[in-house]
Amino acid sequence: MKKFFKGIVKFIVRGALYWWFKINNRAKIIGLENVPKEGPIVFCGNHRSYIDPPLMVATAKRDMRFLAKIELKDNLFFRFLGWAFDAIFVNRNEKDVTAIKEALKTLKSNNCIALFPEGTRNGMEKGEKAKDGVAFFAVRSGAKVVPCGIKGGLKGDKKVTITYGKPLDYSQYKNCKDKEQLDKITQEIMDKIVELAK
Image 1 (tube, helix red, strand yellow):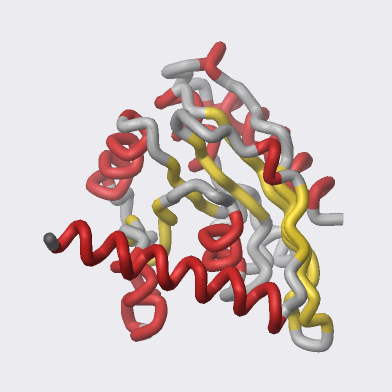
Image 2 (spheres, rainbow, N blue to C red; image 1 turned 60 degrees about the horizontal axis):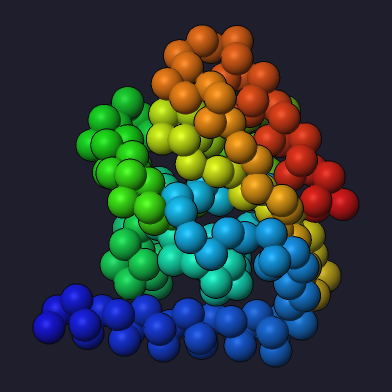
């Protein structure tokens, strides 16, 4: 019964978010045909503002569990969204093994996770190196990576466009632990995200 109730809440909230973005931000969604209808996916995009995670959740047409910093629980709205969409909260001050295991378990069940390689908002602009999390989950699970680029939706530019790119397949590197190779995959993913966000 609890799962059924949560499913209804998720359906309502996703619909409300979708129409909010459509009306308030005149959201334009491009490339949905690139999102596989089945199988595990690691969604990843550029991170500029607080609207990015709900925008992806509302528009991708696949359920996804976001990896989100645990501090977001301090905000009532984001804590509610985290509950509704089964977010995986991560303690960034340590290697959160529990969160990693939960994300891999989700992918193993043919479901989707989502995260931002930048690790923080506007990480690229701050000159921070992209994190290898997406590459790690992709090679560890064999899941496809769907990059997406988000532009607009900021102060003074409310109109937002989200573009989903073609899925990237790194299954040939499954279980690879080589840091240099993971860095190379991460850079390839980031280059694609930047291209989609132009």
